[in-house]
Image 1 (cartoon, rainbow, N blue to C red):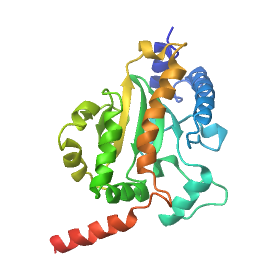
Image 2: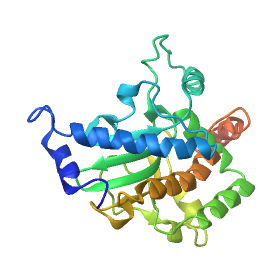
Image 3: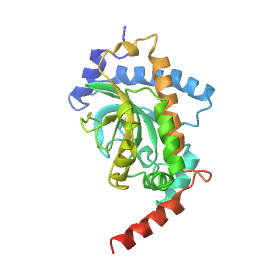
Image 4: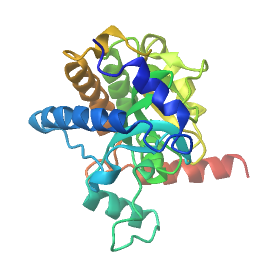
Length: 259
């Protein structure tokens, strides 16, 4: 039996306005999945954290859209302290009540349940500008582009990569297999516009996919999160992974070219 049934998927279509209790059992089921998955994340020493407020661990806000989405999302990202520091670097006033820190301003590994899919994605939204710029600066160096290609080659070939916004699946994407051939990755990343594009990399499952059975969903989810974490760690800004000077140098060069 699959962990999330068709009923769980369909419950998200009704909306709370039509049925205030719609999806309550699905939210509880998703939270139980989080608890089992997070045990493995901690045992695997992945530096990923759920939302610090229990009521927001599972929410209808997705890192793929600035609006509530009619989906249920489980984001893992920086610790609260790290998130507050990065938001200060972006010039965002951080509230002492901790309510001003939002996951979509940071790289997120998101598990998302929608009426037509279950997805596990690494999402870097345009609101995560500090990390987007850091990634662009890092990829200006050939050795880091080679590192990224190596990371991608070690991943399954069924991941979808693209720059689109929203919880829907977009045909304008590449698979891992396509992305690692020749200079395809370099060419796509040259079109990436920081502060405008969503960068996302993940896998999508149809409802009641066999990999999401009761007995396998935790192992499947952890395997995917563990793979995506290598990319997350590659792009995440830290004091030891700081390429903003390269980004600023690139911007100065571009201004001279187009002046």
